[in-house]
Image 1: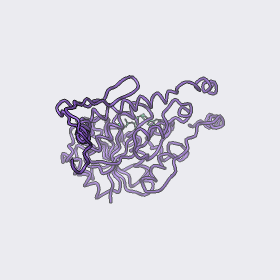
Image 2: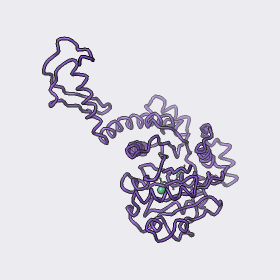
Image 3: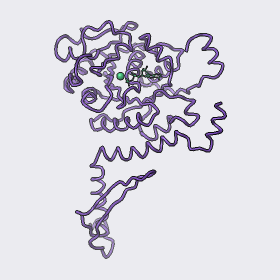
Image 4: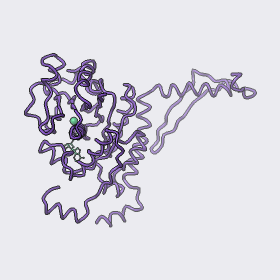
Length: 264
Length: 93
Ligand SMILES: Nc1ncnc2c1ncn2[C@@H]1O[C@H](COP(=O)(O)OP(=O)(O)O)[C@@H](O)[C@H]1O
Ligand SMILES: [Mg+2]
């Protein structure tokens, strides 16, 4: 049975697109057939994060308006045979796709793929409602900041109202050193407040910026902490019981090593 | 540096705790504002319970969340018409 999972947050810039790209790429690496839908219409991003921006011919809106067939709009990933992207239209309004159209589209994709991720726009208006229409599960991304957690709480309520229960949480951009110093809310603090299931944690990691620059999801880089973090989440989605990673702060030795090796 | 900073922070309320506390309070309001029927439902349940003990004026019945700087309190204003002589058992109404 194919799963349609929406990646959402309320607040912008917390890591939805990065998460969708990495979970998709990670699952594809395990041999799953995955499709990523960029539902952030007018602000498409998933294509550049995956390094596929030069291959776009048709987009989501073309499919729902019947300008092309679904298969024609799906862009195959460079690195794996079983990862596909359905890009967002860059020139259309957020309302270009209705909830009914999204539902129909995801139903069609269920025939093709095992996992379908919907990269949701920020906000709680129509773009959000259209994006979640075809999903049966939700992943909420937050950062350890008041505003992001507050918006996550709001989104949990809205998802429930839309019949999407038990969303799972990814806490992104954790800085272990700040948590230890008492200057950043930790995992327990956030889970206590939101009272939802934790799917995973991702450290704040320069590797994500580097990999995004290159258009290669960080999950492909096994040496990076963020890559491992995403890989853990991927395996949890597959039903494997993976313990939460302990986030390491760079000790002086690592810092020297990194300086010498010139990579982060 | 780190070490000194930690020493310095030791007796102060850490910024994380401040964040958590503020978040807790703000969410009390957010959740109520988002679903006004929550207070309405609470009000109806309260009427049911209180009516076991006294007769109340349902029209003047108010439930509110009062906010001060560091806490939120649930307040209810319930006009009482008459006390019951004895506590009615639940099955008799
Ligand atoms: N764990 C992380 N460490 C460092 N940078 C991150 C991390 N997660 C996301 N970012 C960066 O934050 C920015 C916003 O991320 P993005 O995935 O586009 O968020 P959203 O889709 O929620 O708007 C991007 O520049 C991304 O590279
Ligand atoms: Mg995005």
